[in-house]
Every structure is written in structure tokens, then in C-alpha cells.
Image (cartoon, rainbow, N blue to C red):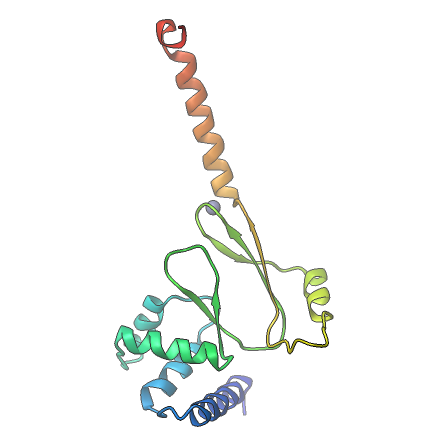
Length: 171
Ligand SMILES: [Zn+2]
């Protein structure tokens, strides 16, 4: 059994147990959505998921996608990132390894942080009264292209104010 096949089998069983425990229906759609999500790597929006389902010739309505992703979040199979972007951003929980992201507060671009130090300190974090299901860290800031854009705008602004006729700058 390949890693991907065993991962699919594991999450299917986990989702089935969750649906049974919550007396929810085990529909073909729900398992097809789960399978599609676990074939995807990285973050995605509901629109991306809808496109993926269409590509797989298993079109599903947006309401079903919202409802199913919500169930998967409750079942600890999916992360809904608290990103600033208007569309909800999701990601599968494929492993127990910690994840860290940097998010641009201006353009909302998300990038993975590849820091071994951060990962190992997250991994070693334990607390007695709290059962940890996944470890995620978010770092907010301004990305390189937004910094560049801001510098460019500042330059234009300074040039404009230099070229302004004196009667406007004087009072
Ligand atoms: Zn940015």
C-alpha cells in the first residue's frame, strides 16, 4: 500500500467514525470531497475545491462543499486558516508535523516557513491540560513585493511634492 493510499484509508475511516458518532449520513459526495481534498497539497479555497471536483467529473454544489468542509474541520481532518483574505482558506491535516506560515497583511499572500528550529520547538511543546490536535504558527508582516511597491509609491509621492508649484506648498 502506498503512503497516499494508506493516508486515504486512514482519513476515510476517521471521517466515517465521525459521521457515525454524530448520526450524519455517509454520502458518496462527502467521501468524494474528502478524497479530493486529501489528494491536494497546500492551501485551497472553496472555489478551488469546486474546480477540482469538476475536473474529477464529480461536480458538487457550493453549499455541499461548505457544509462538508465544515464537518471535516470538526472531525479534525481539515484546517480552516484564520487568514485575512475574504475567501476561506483550507488545508488538509496530512501529518502530525507542525506547520508555520507567513502572511502578508497587505496582499494576504501566504508562504510556508521552512525553519527547522521553529518546527522542533513547536513539536516539543506539550501542556498537561490541553490535548493538541495540530500545531500551527502564523507570522504576519509585509512581503517583499509589497515593500517594493510601498517604496515605489513613496518615491512617486516625494517627486510629486517636489514638483508642485510653490504657491501650493506655501501658505
Ligand atoms: Zn504583500
